[in-house]
Length: 180
Image (cartoon, rainbow, N blue to C red; front, top):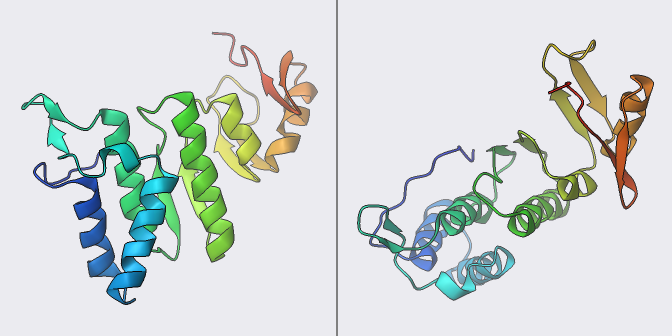
């Protein structure tokens, strides 16, 4: 489970953290584990910081908050979970990295044939394109509180409510849904 906050040993590097996680969780030979670590580092854009200490906010050195968030995702993905649960996996990430993380989680879920469940507050439009199915709860401002369905059809729900929608490529998103 990927929690909102992650703690790492500040004196270790992302590569060391992922190597330890793979050693503790995977039964494959060391050469296979290292290949998995290499691919995960590359996929999450951590190559440039893989040998830097994680650090902390008190020392003023170490990897950035976004890099730490991607490292947290990497730790979960490298262990090959049976179900991938993530609470706010895109927190602290810019739109490019957020989409990259969600896309990778989706690809790995399909490749490994495992469910991937994420809690996302205010997902960016680019993330809607990556999602294949969604279920979410909306605040009390909307007459129906629960929505389940294919993400590419969600605009039909909002059109039913006569909510103005903006278009991003082939995906439509609501504007000012809650009147705020």
